[in-house]
Length: 99
Image 1 (tube, rainbow, N blue to C red):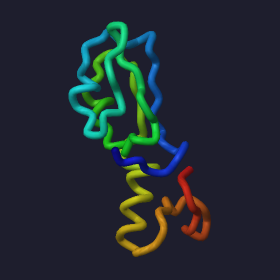
Image 2: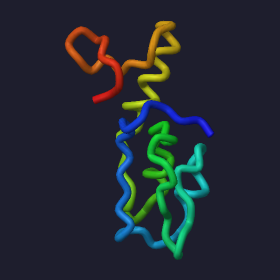
Image 3: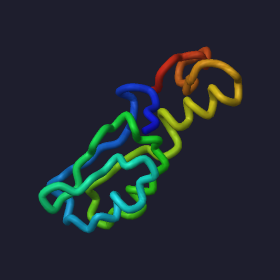
Image 4: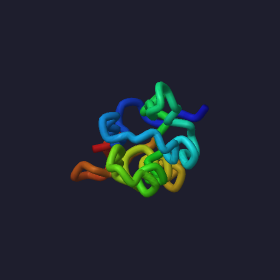
C-alpha cells in the first residue's frame, strides 16, 4: 500500500462521534479506515492522501482533514517540479515535509 510523507497528514478522527456507518471505509481509496468493534479505526495515518472523501461522507463529524494540502500537495508539487516532495509552506517555497 502506498504511503506518503511520514507524520504529516492532517487527518483527525474522533471515535466518540463515529456511529459505525462504514462510509469512510467504503470511500477511502487507500484503506486508511477499517471497522473494528462496530466503529471505524484508523489503520495508518501515513496512507492518507488527504483527498477528503471520508470527510465528505461522514455525517457525524468524526473525521476532519484539510483536503488538498499536506502529503497530496507535496507529492504533486514534487512530480511537477521533478524534485523531492515539498509543500512550499516556508518563505522560500522549498520546505521539505508539510506545514
